[in-house]
Amino acid sequence: MRPLTLDSLNPVVKNVQYAVRGELAIKAEEYRVKLKEKDHGLPFDKVISSNIGNPQQKGLDQIPITFIRQVAALTEWPALADLAPNVFPKDVIARAKELLDEVGSIGAYSHSQGIPLIRKNVAKFIQDRDGYPSNPSNIFLTAGASAGVSLLLSMLITSPNCGVLIPIPQYPLYTATLAQFNGRAVPYYLDESSGWSTSVASVEAAIDKASKEGIETKMLVIINPGNPTGALLDEETQTKLVELCEKHSLVLLADEVYQDNLHQRNQFPFTSFKKVVMKTQSPIPLFSFHSISKGVFGECGRRGGYFECMNISEDIIAQIYKMVSVGLCPPISGQIGVDCMIRPPRPGDESYSLWEKETEALHKALAERTKLMATRLNSLPGVSCVDSPGALYLHPKITLSEKAVKAAREAGKEPDVFYALGLLDRTGICVTPGSGFGQKEGEWHYRLTCLCPGVEEYLNKLAEYHGEFVEKYGL
Image (cartoon, rainbow, N blue to C red; front, side, top):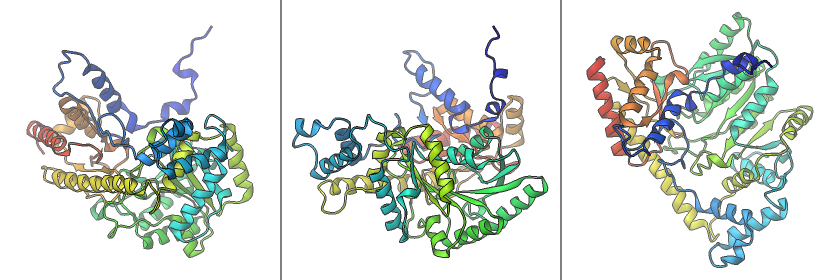
């Protein structure tokens, strides 16, 4: 019998890279296990997983929003309402009953497109947000936004020459999924000098370059607010991007999962692409994504999200439904999480005051941490960092000397990976190197979350390591 080897696998699997869960994350987990040993010999006493936006993970410990956990508890075990009659607020009990009346039990499959009541509620949320109607039949609930992105890319990539415009730096989901489905990434570079802004001319130039290389560009990915940059698009730029999609017959994929992570709401508001497309009466095909993993909910492990289809024919909607039905349905617990996110307590509800207190505290903490971290990073020699107005991250640029670059190459590492590995080995802080997100030739970055508690201690460790690195390798 022939053994199963790497050569037995689909060759595209070898091309898939996902830096957020790559070498550094694996090593961080090894250190986490080693720290349980009595004489571990490590120069730190904990691992800080700053590499991923996973708010409730051990070490970051963001407290879950009470409302969603109470609704989840009563949908998991309805008898709790009677066993603990004075524990749950009336609006929580009513919400759980309404959902259970619709689905029966969270242990049952739902409609493959998602629970109809929740899709109806999502449509109302979108309509209230944008001021334009939304059709529940065009909404698909998903196991997180990533599942929707992967599904649609698998359906829209039609040949190895099919190009997808992606921002650089970008969330590695996109390059990984393109590799999986044998598509071509067409990079367009964000402008770090102007707050990681998106230049329409840069996107146009990327299309022209791809065309000369024989690539047929079919899609444009926009991440707004940005990941890893946190940048927000203004409505004027969004309108120009919609016009560009019309000009080049592009499908627009709008990744809007950080729409509620806004640290400077007055100066940098969020505008959905759905609103821009409706306002301009554009015919472009648009898929918009949202998730319960981000915002202040941070329910990453619950796996809930949705995408809305706009200007998509009924024939294509039917094909999408066919594909999602192969997987039967998204997790019911995730769907319930979506309902809690888009239909939170309202003024007058028994749960409202606590919900307001918890969410405002989280927004305030994230904004303060982001500001403090950007200020401290910018004070370090050879480091520059855009003060992110959105999302959960900062993406500082680091200057690495020729000596450092040479040492990295000799070690068989990208220079920013070399820097990040040293940071992890010395302090237990795990970040994601910028090479995993894409960057201009000769530039180096890393992404770190703004979720870490004890931020002063965290920044002091980071600054101490950076000083040691600069002393050893220079600038």
